[in-house]
Amino acid sequence: MSAALTVASSFPRRYDPRGLGALVVEAQLTRRIPEWIRTRPPGGPAYTRLKGLLRKLDLATVCEEAHCPNVHECWGGGTATVMLLGKTCTRGCRFCAVSSASRGEDVDAREPEKLAAAIAELGLTYVVVTMVDRDDLEDGGSSHVARAIAELRRRVPELLVEVLVSDFRGDGGQVATVARARPDVFAHNLETVERLQASVRDARCSYSRSLSVLEHAKSVAPGVVTKSSLMLGLGENESEVVRSMRDLRSAGVEVLTLGQYLRPSPWHLPVVEYLEPRRFEELRQVGMQEGFKYVASGPLVRSSYRAGEFFLEAHLREGRTK
Image 1: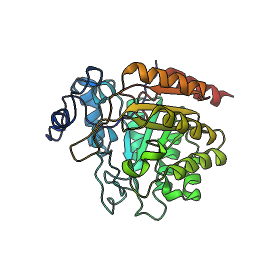
Image 2: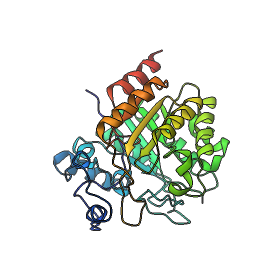
Image 3: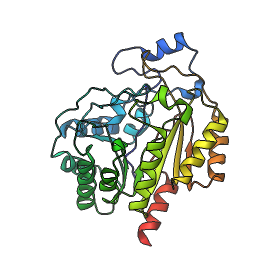
Image 4: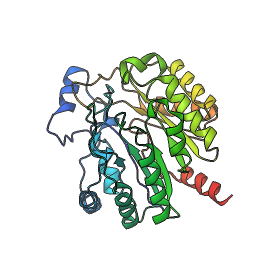
């Protein structure tokens, strides 16, 4: 049975690590959060061991920085997602709980080695590594991510590596730097439908740029699986979601995740709609009909949630064998 390193975003139900009471406020300002969204607080020996290891190596995780609703499940199972290049993003998307500023922290040159050491110690077979946007760096952090991939390959040759990266300001050379480092999966999130891009994402992001990043990654590294994600419940309609699916397929994207947007705090965008689990299943079926190799769809699914799904891991390992 394989282990995996996975990711998610937003506050967990009834768990508020910063003491903001955000979920209580959201329930009062909008509507009661439905039963299928609720999760339990984290804990247990695996959770404690993983937290201690990450602290010892001074590694940041998106699980904590973005207030993951699945932290009890992932960390309790010994899995988490490491976030490279610091804890501060240089963009300020209106859905995201990660801290933002015009400049990020100093880059830790030893971070790739620390990451590989942690993965080796945990004995994982599948790892997802994400990053904050670093518009303040000349190469957007692309060389740092590429080094992390190379170090993981050197330290744990059998490891499957998924990277979830920024748009690198649309710079094809920076996208290629990461793609040519040969991660098994190159992921970049479209986040929402085209109509809502300006109200949901930072002004420096765009629908067409995200599609071009995914398309370029596929063109320079055809053997790498490309992946993207959409948040639902922001006011989109089904026809817009289907159009986004088709646009992603036209860009060569093979794997798609669909999840419910959850409001991280009262200062973020409100939830327009909580989709029922059956609607996520219906959209999963639509995605498969559109030609994706794999679609993960559900209220608590996140861009790299349960990255080690047996289907995806089996597909990647079969490709390696060939």
